[in-house]
Image 1 (cartoon, rainbow, N blue to C red):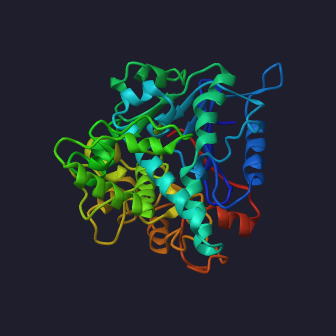
Image 2 (image 1 turned 60 degrees about the vertical axis):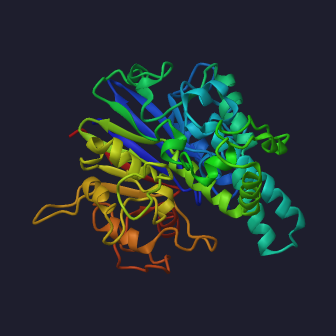
Image 3 (image 1 turned 45 degrees about the vertical axis):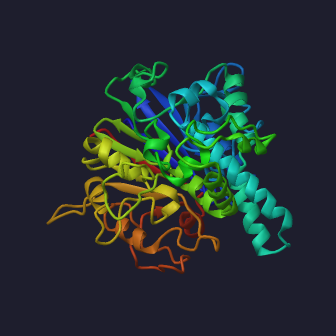
Length: 445
């Protein structure tokens, strides 16, 4: 059988669980990117991992070898499956985590600037939302607040991925970023060691390690001031009130600072939203290059603003930052795109008559003349009443016009119906063809 690179995207509901098998000089390198979902049970994730085990090489003791686990960012639709017993039969050689997981690792906090500020901001949201849940009557409002609080409370997943799972496998997790080559513990040679064939590469395009400079508020902005010039205290989940120890910066009066902090704490939903966007933008974005093929896995990276350029005082989308820092890599066409954030309109760099569309035009150019579409794209998604715009119909049609594996028979999608080209989707493949996953195969060029 000829060499084939396999991407298998499991149907896990609204979430990502992606297996990649990369041929490598007579053997294979096995990679898992994320394992989580939202609103669905653990059974779909357990089924996916059971299937994954069948694909992995077996050790004499019956365990299976996974070369690399990547968890793009700490949201449950990407890490919910990392519970203590699910991975008992899998031996993991390498774990790469987003800098957003730095919360429990002091050495990581020192390398990834302002990760401590993100932890403090999340603690603010947790504290305020917990108070709101306690006084909310039963009903949709309480359910909504509890969902938002659950999305922020990731103690078990943090412990499992930062400590327990690495400890069981005798390794340390690596907190990766696009500027990893400047990191004393994570050099380009570590990436190369995954593959015997040195022409096969995994490049990390995002995020950048300076979280505050690129993705949070930047100096002089309200969130920066509210959290303190030093990034806030080391927050422990057992005592979220430690946030009160934050001292006001010298350039603002204590009275103004108290007013500012009370205003921010009172707007817990806004804080939670800011944290959610920041964490999405801290997604590990992977570009895999193999035998002339280019495959991009962007996690839930978002784009932001009316321009493509980044803002100097922070609050940027990851796609904007990547275009500014990784334009060389993003200016070449892809052979595969994992559509970001389950088809959310702000997670793929395209919008009608918007400058950000230049990025998608570079990655998935619309064929001109007699040229045929050659690239492929898949969305791991599920429609939900909570977010009716996921996946976004206009975005589905735009990507469908750019890829060769587009489908026009997804009759179960009332938003689009049949006869409209859109990329392959895990939910619709499950409905129309009873498939538990979507496979995409690539051959050497």
